[in-house]
Length: 437
Image 1 (cartoon, rainbow, N blue to C red):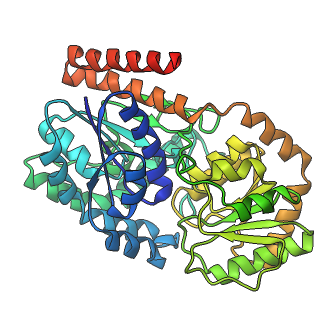
Image 2: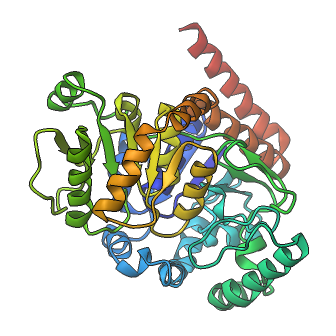
């Protein structure tokens, strides 16, 4: 079976799908990984075939646009970047697909959804986080529009429908339906609320304890657990970092991820908070980030696989990305989250509601960060909750295997039962070989 995995977004979106793809390839499937060339290096290290889409320059121009990280402008900015690439993605996938192909794609890979409708190429949607399930039963948390849970369900449903049709469709539907007309397809509505989710299957790459499935989610949703992929198989902890970790108390790790922040202000506030609390810290900051004068209790690295670092950390301060949050759950450490845009607010609210962290609403404010970090580190209840949820995190490999099973079921209904059974038998044989080695 040929699985084309389409990854749209930042490293937080791409890494989980790389984890899935490595498992698919290891178990005998032919995998093409479609993403920006900005990720060519890690795709190559994973041993996968890269299907490049767009340019690295376009990717960096998009994520370095301040409007993408402003809640007031983030959706329209993101849509402009996505809309111009829908037809090129459709054309690329159309040229690659054959009779053995099934697509597994990020929901913003609208070209894949169009190809499914136009040519019948099977598709399973991949939901990185639950925030894009527009549910009136459990409304997602967004900075600019959140439906209060105390309202009656009928009112919540009406408000969500109005938002979906009156706001989201006004942004997305003109571009989508113009392209559908060119392809000979009828117009659609409720683009974000319903249409973008594949009717053949949707994978939620998170566990049910993080987001309980709701009755008004799209049909055929399967939750897998967190894929938990990072580059731990390719990057070792360097000697200086290893020495730092071994010779003192567990540090607090700070990372804003791909979020565009004022690095100097952010890390100045972090430095002041660490020194006031007499704590050690590790800053994960890109080489171009401006940093304050650092004290010996702080070490800076551009990248360290979180699965190697967080089990030896005291707490994690981050932006609310789902991949980063999942690694903190797996390590069993408290989280201090400062969300900026997109799904980060919903993820932060879920971490907080599980009692595993605190959400801080004041970005890069020294006093606010100090007070929040002090509260986080002193709260024994939070640490107890983190320990309990760590035991509930399944392995990344288990999550990837569950995802593969769902994809194979979807493929069996479209590609033919015999063809999928042969790849499934090969998978079982490879698993058995691995068990005996």
